[in-house]
Structure formats: C-alpha cells, structure tokens
Amino acid sequence: MPARLGQHFLKRGSILAKIAAAACPSREPLVIEIGAGRGALTGELLGRSERLVAIEADKALAEHLRERFPGAENLTVIHADVLSVDLAQWGPAVVAGNLPYYITSPILRQTLELGALLKRAVFLVQKEVAQRLTAGPGSRDYGLLTVITQLRADVQVLFTVPPAAFSPRPKVESAVVVLTPKPEQSGPMLSEPGFVEFLGLCFRQKRKTLRNNLKGVYELRLLDRLAAAGRRAEQQSIGELFALYQQLKAAKS
Ligand code: SAM
Image (cartoon, rainbow, N blue to C red):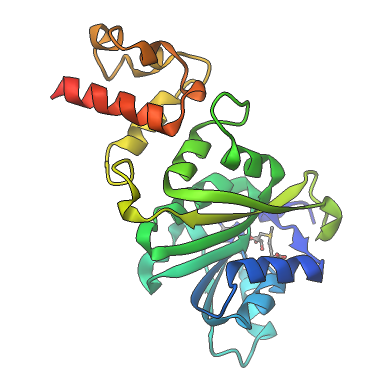
C-alpha cells in the first residue's frame, strides 16, 4: 500500500517498548494515542495505563483495533480524524503516537494547546521535524514550528529510528521526541494571548526582516525606531521576540 494516511507501521518491538516507556515511565491514569494503526504501540501502552484512548482515522483499522483487544476494558477506540477531536475532554493526559507525518505540525499545535492538561507528549516524527523542534536561533531549522513548540514545552530527542524499522519503509529517517510542558505560571510569554499570533506574523516570510513582516499591522515609524525590527525572526530567540512584542504593544496602547 502506498503511504496512504501516513501509514507506516512500526514493526520493531524494542522501539515500541522504548516509546511506551518514555510515555509512561510509571503507570499513567490516562493516555491518548494518536494514529493507533494496527495496534503495535497500543498493546505496549495498554499495559502501562489505567485508561487508553486510541484515535484512528482509518475505519478498517479502527475496527481491527477493537477486534485485536477484545477484553481490554481500559481501551476506548475512536474512529475519527484526530484534528476534529477535543483532546481536552478526558482531563489531564499523556499523549503519544507514531504520527502520520502529513499532519505532524497541526497535531503538535493541537497537543500543545492542551496547556495544563498535557502531562507529556511522546511522538515519533520525521527526523527533520525533530531537528526543527530543537533548533536554536540562526540555524536553518529554526522557524515558526520551533518557537511555538519551545514556547510551551521543553523538547528532547530521545533516539532516531531507521526506515527499516517500519513496514512499508518511509523514505526518511525518524526520531522520537519528548515534549515536557512548561508550567503555565513559568513566564509572562505563556499567558500573553496575542503572542502566538505575533509569532505567526514574525515568521510570515522567513527571508524578510521583522519590519517587513510586521509593517501591515504596526506603523512603520514605530518599527523604524526599534533596532530588532531590522533583523529577521529566524535570528531572534523567543525572549527577544517577546521583548519586541512588548515594546510594540506598549507603543500601540
Ligand atoms: N501506531 C501505528 C504504528 O506505530 O505502527 C501506526 C502509525 S502510522 C505512522 C500513522 C497512523 O495514523 C495510521 O494508522 C493512519 O491511518 C493514522 N492516521 C492518519 N491520519 C490520521 C488522522 N487525521 N487522525 C487519526 N489517525 C490518523
């Protein structure tokens, strides 16, 4: 089968066990698995959680999951597109999954939006995405996905996974990442409602200066007074972007 719905199934048991152990170092009250597929990771997570909610978009696979774990009272299988599911409905959760790569970014955003309800997230993603998630300012991989993720979570790359660990083999290397949410009270950036939108504006066109990306929203004479506006977002740390946001906000009000 071609990579329909990003269907590359993990077949190496040692890797599945390591992902489950990272998601649930001890028994967890609630785990949400995204893209449960044929249940390879589901089986590992079941033994480590009081309740497991497995979300799968492919109807045949969702049915297969129900049949594969017939007596598992702690398993709820949901046949749905994960992006249409309210992940907050079950309360505080660990989120895990070997993600369908074609929607990695929206899934990351959706997961991080859980805020205080997210205990931790452990995802298998494209290695290139893992590099973007951990990049620092000035590097080629640093962009909007980086800052939006690092704003809310500390990111750690646990290990890489070769294409041979999957069936069918993907064309790219993969990596397991752990996202540990920052406490909600850890800084003013997290509680500033307009900041994520501001970050979106800053990275609108990566090669342009902040001045050029922001000029439709803020007055040019204001932007021209600020040295940071002459730089590109990709060269700025999140703290520096937040300082610029605060200066512009103060000048506007
Ligand atoms: N967890 C399995 C494993 O490790 O072998 C399968 C992982 S496979 C990379 C991704 C899975 O996500 C597939 O089973 C696919 O059908 C499912 N999927 C794709 N798009 C989805 C979506 N929008 N919502 C939920 N599941 C989705």
